[in-house]
Image (cartoon, rainbow, N blue to C red; front, side, top):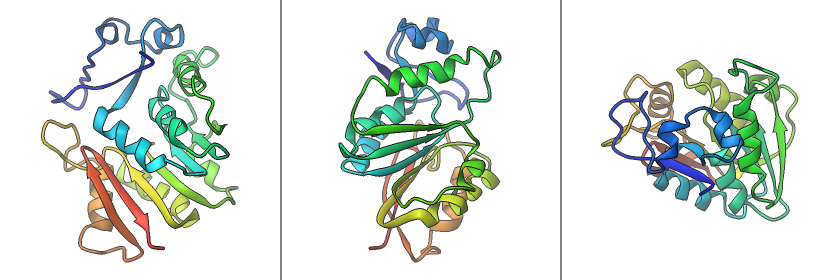
Length: 218
């Protein structure tokens, strides 16, 4: 199996469990790069299916925050054949930057599919946004989870999303058996901006587990 998704319920926001037994024993991303375990998702099976569904046929897409690449893999499998998926992540948390097994595992996962094309942008999202000029029809915000950072990602990138385009926030909804809490940055931000029709140009079109999906009015 190429990837493993989160089991529910989660006992805490710091303990992740997976059905694949190798995940518990081989946690380091080097094992995913070597193919000794599947790439580990930070989302559930239902969230994985939702991302694939919303990515279907999209042609200009950005994901902010890649981790081991499972969500990017889902997007690539569903995107338009002539589409481009831009993956924004500085991969800065590796203890040994020259090896950076999280980045290697992500490349291995994403490159297991050849649908469309992929452009890797190894920058922080606010740095990548400074020179961005292209329209988007899909944006996944799953980078820095502080309230301030989520708001900056929204302010930097949402103006490029065209009418009919969608934005997905991960870790943005509290749900039974889940991990987000009221003090999560994505939870606070989406509640502030989208609950009670406070953002009239956007409509919430789906909430499933921790995902919240909004669409720009056509």
